Amino acid sequence: MAFGVDRSTVTRAIGQVRPLLAGRGFATATGVRLRTLADVFAYAAAEGVTLRMDATEIRVRRPRAGRGGRKAFVSGKARQNTIKSTVISDGTGATLWCGTHRPGRVHDHTAVRIEGIDALLDAYPQVRILVDSGYQGLAKKHPGQVESPPLKLRPGAWEPYRIAYEDKRKQQSSRRIAVEHAIAELKWWRVLQRFTGRRELLPQTVDAVAALVSDRTITW
Image 1 (cartoon, rainbow, N blue to C red):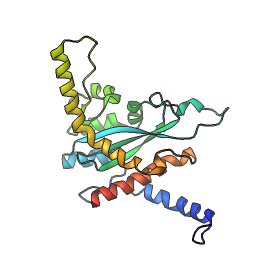
Image 2: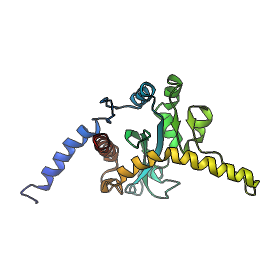
Image 3: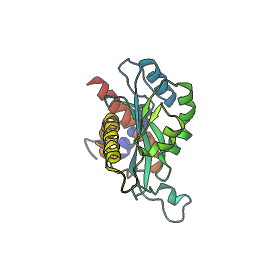
């Protein structure tokens, strides 16, 4: 017990507060709160915001042996059991949305496609998104709207080509880095550095933390 409060009471209070924070949505400078990916696209179209999108992985406990889908959480990139979340920010690094929480084995591109991003890009042709190499397929399907880093050159490429490639890659990275800052703010929270609770509670926990980070970013 701490301060005369039993652990079960604290756990129950967290269970009541978590969904309220997770459903709060994400703050914007206009006062509008964004709760869905469709809200983000409508906001970006109305305000002329270029979006930055990336995925982050959070380590979780490995499912017990014998349980179905045990390998679904093994990330090919992190080589750990993770759950992957997609984060979208604006150019200042303010979190506009966090979602598509999927097991670590699901590819970044697949996660946002399941969320319906292709239809939203078609519905809002004026919206632009900066992404990393994990979304090359999305950039190929929506040229002019989705910008990803240039494809890697083959070994032994001509020196002027290599210099031009590095310059273009660095320029794209410097414009996209705002979303990396948004993800870093989420990872400052210890609970999202390695989640030891029940895996089914992580998506709601991520949304709750992201909503708090969003409020702080706009307030400051």
